[in-house]
Image 1 (cartoon, rainbow, N blue to C red):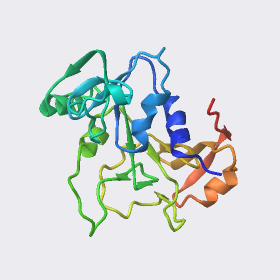
Image 2 (cartoon, rainbow, N blue to C red):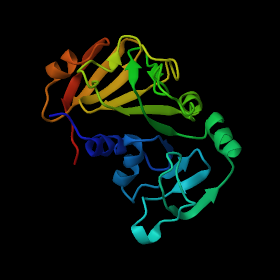
Image 3 (cartoon, rainbow, N blue to C red):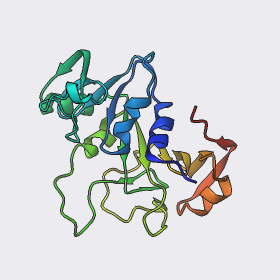
Length: 219
């Protein structure tokens, strides 16, 4: 079986290094903070103006004025700082975010991403993803590998409107972990209940298997 949402977040947490400033997108990315060990000195940034985002609050801790970019209530760690949206995006555009983790509708073999709209659907706005993929030092995508009809979302070329071009470094899907290289996707790890062959069969974009490819370790 492919991974569930929590397992995708658990695997991505392994990519977060001590000392990083990390921006988490909406959806699966917001779960990553739950799996980063407290021993790692990591500052989570929310583009609506908070550096030092803490875990989701218990019922008694909920502060309706303290939310992340996805409008979920959060907590603030000791030493957290609050600032305007303008300052937040100056931080992002200035290259001060080490890592951003985003969801996606499609990623293609060139490292381009589509994650902000589907033509014909109502769109509330493009959000901060366009700035994040351009300004963050490293971009990791958390996503489902296939759509509801079984079609691959790791494509030869994105078919939906692009958020960014040639900007994705790594993809963690419910099927596996992929580097994005000038030669296309490289499968590094696959979900424990799958095989490399099954992952390749479900991937439209050009993809090769790394020599040391192995099952994911979620421990």
